[in-house]
Length: 424
Ligand code: PA5
Image (tube, rainbow, N blue to C red; front, side):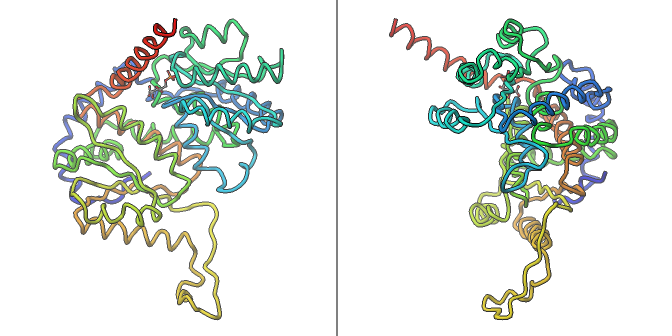
């Protein structure tokens, strides 16, 4: 698939000075212990997909709503896919409503969530690789008690745990209580785990075809296994953004023209931010949804400090469209657009934006895919994960750890322990 179609400021020839370095990193990457996700789409996933679809069918038949508990890599990917493919209004086709918990520590959020669940049939999928992260652990405590209060002995059948195969508090609780479990492979880190049960179970319950998603990922895995930068679009993207960073464009803006992609932006932001932002290095990843944000932050992009470059994400075909109607009065003067579709006008606004921004010294990289569907999202997810790992290595940082996140957790726990000592 020719995903990377256009760029400015840096040419195909310019990037080739990185050819040797990229090839070296390519081999290093394959040896790293946290890169189970690279080969995952090639493995036979029939058993996993069948068992996920089996559990998903049961949940779709018995529940009105699934509560997914998780934070960071344990929920962002599922929500990204689910919201990108969900209808804008109303319930998903062939799936049930998904709501999220354990992604924050807002008392108002969790209290309102419980009130919202009342009167609905509920299942819970709690997802945590370490099994001990504060946000999901707190939410699970609340929801576990809630489910036991509502369903008694049957609650155990309505809670599904996705966690490490062998270790962690959540694993211990799941074994002791007898919850059904899905495994997060040891060699796949949180933000690289969306194509495992972490993302697959919730999206299957949302009615999305996970086989299609994995087929798209396998297509990407096959194409992007290429070690030569000249023939690998994910590596080209990694090198372009690295070169722009070196030229002083320190912020990358991922921009889409479809509002349903706003949660996909969040997944992308975490992937790149947590993988690259280390040792006082790394592009700052930010996101915008156009045309909405052209009327908010567009002024800064066009005319503010020249530290931004833009990665435009565009899907040629979006399901659902309508023509601008003809109005005999033409009081608004818009009859010249009658019979053109909204998606056509949106695509033209994308072209105009790319031209205006490039002229204003905002380099533009463009990633284009044929259709917004499960297959191409699977492709794109893999594309970004591969590009991200390469990018981080070009910066000479480890793409697979997150020491900065640990620092906040330590400080919070110290403060909570101090409070505990005072009250005892
Ligand atoms: O990418 C990561 O590793 C993190 O964002 C984790 O996914 C996040 O901190 C949640 O961790 P856990 O799944 O262990 O609860």
